[in-house]
Image (cartoon, rainbow, N blue to C red; front, side):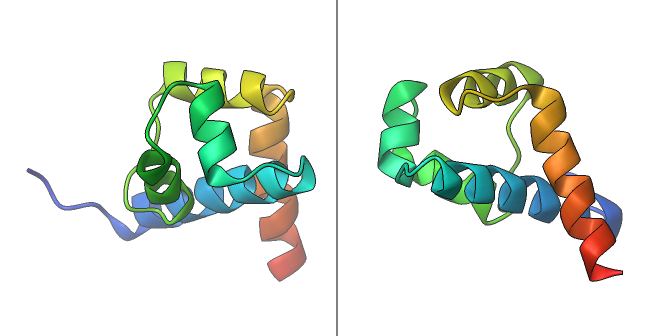
Length: 85
């Protein structure tokens, strides 16, 4: 297993934060989101805490369950990063 680079870790952290912010804005728990996409709640926790990242197909399912587009998830990442600069 290869080591995750700092850039990859930052990306996963930003992606997880974006998913969590949108999920919370929609009033969903991790368990509720997980149920909508047929995954264990622990997997959502792992995504939101940058332990791992979803594949493109799972990310698409997450976006659908949150009623947003993939672009909105990515834009949410960029908006957060720009505010921190």
